[in-house]
Length: 628
Image (tube, rainbow, N blue to C red; front, side, top):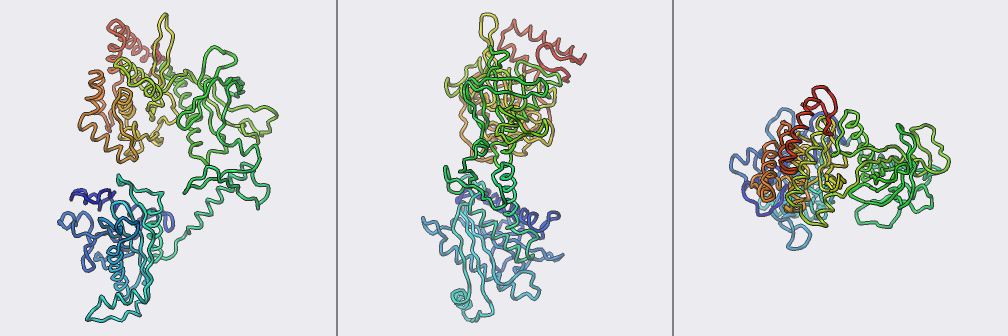
C-alpha cells in the first residue's frame, strides 16, 4: 500500500498496483455482498493521465514509461463488448497525490479540491453529452488519497443551468459550481498506517467504502440487500444472545448498556442489572483453595483443588491438585461458558484452548503417540456445579452460570519460556540445544499422527524439572495444542513474531512451518533482537531480510555451530512441500546435549524404535510408532 510520499520509481509502481488491489477488494466485496454473490462485478479499474487521455491498465502505463503522468484510477462500468472506454463510463474517480493536506492542518488543500472538481465536472459533462446514459447524471464521487490520508468529495448539480462561454469556459464552469452546484467534502482521515497497511476499521476507509457503494447504486440501481438489513441482522444476533442469557422477560426488554471501561470507538455490550447469571457469564475466575467437581465421560466424577493461578495470553490457566492423588501439581485450563462463544472472540480462543486442545491430545493418545515431551491428558469434561441441575440431557446445560463450562486437566506444570527469559535473561548454549532437541522430539512424535502444532512461541513452550536419581533434569515441552493443524482446512494461529512465512502468507502450514517457528524461538531465547511487528507485511519483510542477510544463522552460530546448521537446513525447506527429517537432527542434538556415551544409547533406542515401528507397536523410547 502507499506508504512513502518520497517513493522511488519502482515504489510508485507498487503504489499503483496496491491502489488497484485495494479498490478491487472494495468493489468485489460490495458487489458480492449487496448485489450478486456469484459472477464477476461488471466493473474494471483503469489508470488515467488527464481528462482527454485514454484509460490504461497499470501494467501498460508502466511499460510505456508514463508512470509519472498518472493521476489516479477510475472505476469503469463495462459496456458490453466495446473495448473503447469513454469518460461517461466512469463510475467513481480516485486521485492519488503526494500530499492532500493544507499545510499542517487536517483538511484538504485548495489545489486538491480544485483538481477533484475539475475531473468531476468533466465526468458530469461527458455523461450528459452521451445519448445512452447508464449512470445517473446528477452527481459523482471523487476519492482523493495520499500516502497516509484520504477523503471523499461529492460534486452534483443541474448542468442545464450551465451557461457556457466559449471564450472563457473555465470562468463559466466556476460560475456554475459557485451558483448551481453542490460540493460536499468528507473529513480527512487516515487510510494507511506508516507501513502502508490499510486500516479497515478506520473512518477513512469507511468513507471510501460508502462512496463506492453509492457510486455503484448510481450505475446499477439499488442493491438486493440494504445496509440497514445488515444492521438488523446484527440486532437479531444480539436478541438471540439476550434470550439465551435470560435477560429479557418480554419482547420489549431493553439491551443493557454499561459505560464502565468505555473507550472511544468501541461498542460494549454489558449489564448493570443485579442478575447473578449475567455477572457470571464473563470469564470464570477461580480462587485458591476452591474445589471443582469435574464430570469426565470416560472416568466419571473427579475433584480438583485450585492451588495457584497463572493468567497468560488469552486463556485462564491454574495449578491444581487431584484430591485422589494430592502429591502432584497439575495444569488446569478453564474454557468459556457455551453462551459466551458468539459475542466474544477472546472466549472463542478459550474454546480452542480447552475443547479443541482436548480433541488434539486425545487423537495423539488414541494413535499411540505417548512421549514425555508432550502434555498428557489427566481429565477433561465439564464442571458439576453445587445444588440441583435442571439440564434435560447429559450434553445439555441448565441456568447455572457454571453449568457446561469445559475443563481440561493435563500434566506437566512448568514455566513458559517468555517468563524465564524476562526473568533470567538469554539461554546458554546448553539450554538452547536442549530446548531445540526436546521440541523436535515432540514435533516428531506429533508428526507421526499427522499433527502439526501451528503455534510455536515462547508462551507455548514450558520448562519442567524432573527428579531423576540425585539430579534434576530439565525438559522443554510444547503445550497449548488448541490451534494444532489436523487437516488442510484447519487454520493455525498467526503470531507476527514466531509464525512461519508460509502461515503468514497463506494462512496454512507447510511441512516445515513448525521447524521454522522453532528457529525464531531459539533466536529469541538466545538474545536475538526481534523488533515488535504491527502487520503481516512488516513481519514478512523482517523474515525475508533476516534470511537473506543470514542474520539469524550468524546469531545462532555464536551460540552453537549445530544450531546454525539446523537453521541453514530449515532455511532450505521453508515454503517447500518437503518434510523435516526429525530423526537425523534429534540424533545430532542428542550427541551435543548428552555427550558421546549417551549418544550411543540414543542411537540404540532409535534402532529399537525403528524395529518396533515395523511391528506397529508404540516406541519404547516414548515417541510414537508408525513413522516412515
